[in-house]
Length: 339
Image 1 (cartoon, helix red, strand yellow):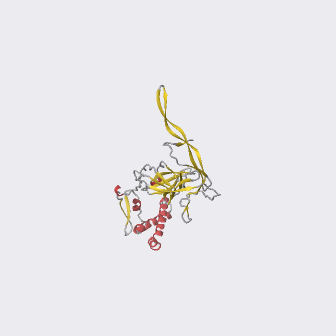
Image 2 (cartoon, one colour):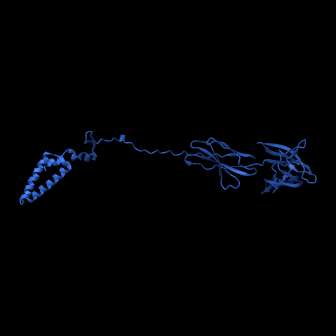
Image 3 (cartoon, helix red, strand yellow):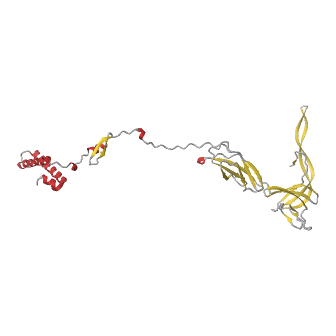
């Protein structure tokens, strides 16, 4: 069958296979020479086939030119596809450094150093402790103010409140009368930074009442009860006899009877007077003493012992504990109870 018919009927792949076969036969005939007449005839046939291939080349699409694709990978050129098919090789464009977008990292500024914490001052009453402190010298970087408290039984300060950076006071209502506490201030900034704790402010929460014993007689005590009522200190006098079950005397301190048989307990201390007596009260006073040393007269300060008979009131509170209240006397300046 002519090779032209092979192209038309079987396509380019079959024609290519036939061409390779013919070339192989031609090469064998050329190697064998003229020794075999049959091979000579085959060589002539292959030559004829080569002429046919030269006259009827395969379409270009059957053997695509891959040169542009190979050149596209070179650093100096780039292949660009065409609309009508094929490739066009163009020089690779130069990249200017100004057009390169660089990845930059955002570096956060270091937080400002916190100023020293202010030292608070404490003022206490039976209901609360009021803390006050000066505003920090530099508030830049301060995000909050922390209040720490250490009370009886606390091994270390405990955080009580977190306030705004502009706060300069705070009331602590979680205290109990008769106990002592210490408060400290701490400044906190960004990124969990915090200053050291300030020096403490200490205070003892006073009791809700105080019993003063200005005088009286051996049978009756004259008391003045000072009590914290509705946010303020108020005072009221009371004459109280010791409790006596035979006479029905209750001995309650701070309880008074009003006209009409009504009983007022506004100043009730829940304490009972159980006895009155006179005791020797010893105390010391400051004095100046003269002495000679190497023939020179010198002076020095000493304390001299004094004593006075003084009334003593013995009381019992609601917990069953006994207390002693001494009569208020005008003692000399600088007098101190003797040990």
